[in-house]
Image (cartoon, rainbow, N blue to C red; front, top):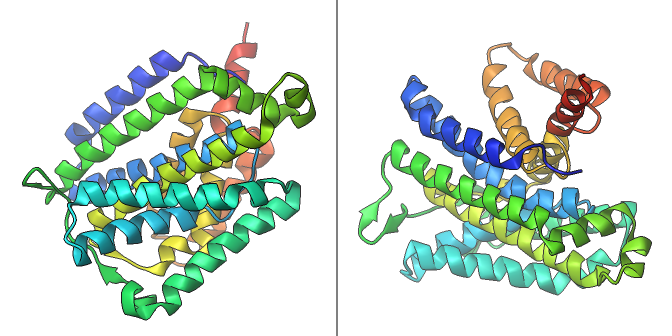
Amino acid sequence: MKHLLPRPGLLALATVLLLLPLVLPNNYALDIAVRVALAAVAVIGLNLLMGFAGQISIGHAAFVAIGAYGSGLATQHLAWSPLLSVAVAALGAALVAWLIAKPILRLKGHPLTMATLGLGIIVNMVLINEVSWSGGPDGVPVPPLMVAGFVFAKVLHWYVLAAVLLLAAVVLSLNLFESPAGRALRGLNSSEVAARVAGVDVGSFKVRAFVASAVFASVSGSLTGHYLGFISPALSAFTHSVELATMVVLGGMGSTFGAVLGAALLTLLPQLLGGLQGYEMILFGLILMLTMMFLPKGLVPSLALRLQRRP
């Protein structure tokens, strides 16, 4: 489904990101905004795989962890510059994704889902057991991000970086959506047989989507590690993978702005419901269930369809 007025949507997102620091009450709220933006980058990448290409992954947190550990350890132990570390970690995630994409993406349906789950479990277990370099379950500290001598030490610095990165990710996703490659991905999502008949190299496009989504996740993980100053195997946990996939589905599969909205809601809701003394997860689950019941295509596509149907 085509995006509803993507250019005004991009302008609206840029306006919101520009005004947020002026209206947020304190650094805690700004910290949440940074976390939302960094998570949204990974979710936009996963949406390329799930929403555009129709390939379900519940092990994508593995690439977030590869980015975080790759960048963090290279910066700390090899004394590489953080930017170089982030780039090399992204290349490493792309290589891992390319190596496993062909055998995994030959599968369909539940077998594909289980294979991606296996990937996440493998990465998580390696990070837990290789204590000598990963720190094991306790994790490891990560040096701060420094670019050309400038250290990103304040939350506002990180907010500006995260907002720019988010806008760049949205622009890339929107451009891909309307490009011939994006149409090919959406075609194989609808019907692989029809896509093959139309001349689409289905296997190649699946691999490209998988690699691209891994790079988005890696960059998000790398910057999250430098922002938090600490990384642990929880980044690659099954629950984190499910959370990323849920963000895609909740916002609307195939919708770039839906990915951003899904990341924002699932990051904000636990914070908003945190004072309910043990009932927050029940209400959280109820909200998700009702959303899927009444807006089955996800928030943004469902609301867009309702607006289009109005006289």
